[in-house]
Image (cartoon, helix red, strand yellow):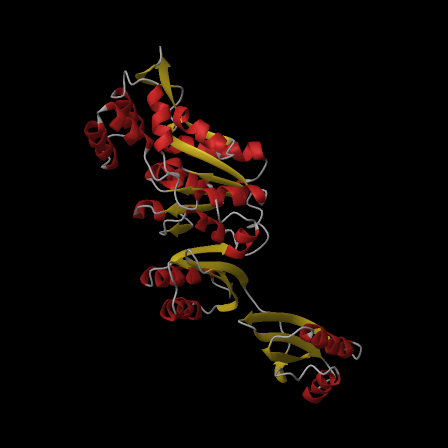
Length: 396
């Protein structure tokens, strides 16, 4: 196999340095050298540009001479050449490791990188996707043992208070065209049934039934019917009043607008009620949604539901149906939710995200977010804060 040389250009970034380097390397190609790989990073105007060159009949001096001829050195920039032995292809497969927290320091990164090293893996690239409102890094990791890498990094991230996502690298991530979200406590800060109960003067009774369901004493369908029964006689105008009081989760509008501008499709599935959610979702440009239906007779709620109840299994069926309608495979779907009712759709989706969720939901998810900003979902899709700002959505 051919000998390999690592050419490193470093110093204050300036116009034309890349052109000069590649002109020098092109002159080497004319005498049998091959450009194997290139990498560059610039931080606050400081440049590090590396190129790997393979050649049978060249030495360090010849590579140095080519750089000198093109005047790559100068103006504070230094070009060095190092023989790195025999050129070889890296083994293993690449994973994307995304780290997210309100702020990320060196100690937290040390914990993660120690776990990467312990699994026999290496980090090939680091991208700082965002610095606000949260800190987010994306690592490209080459690993021959994905299971060991996942175990080690997951434990390290938990110990360092970092949110984590580990995904296969490749174009398929950018091809996830359908993002399905829960409504209550995910897209919205509120629980619609609680607002309706408060308006109907039965908040305490509804809370007791909800607690019973969360304790596993009754299932979702039974608990929903019992809670809705308490709303009997509530005038339909209250639905509009409740809708006007709904609060979007911080970052929700930014997420939806960015997804739309990038060609993604957003959808909502909810254990709440179409009659409350539909006008709001239409206003937000969300055209794929499903939720439960309240029965209304003579301008008032009857305390009953119509149609099939959208429960945990129903949410997963809705995700599959939307994927068919949009024309994407399940591998290209994302599901975001916070409750046990979201576990099935999170498990079915290509990327399942637990958003400020309990441990049981996090255990079924591919990624977990504990920050209060819904647009952090975009970072798990590889979309940087700069790209979001370029799209002009941060004011939304």
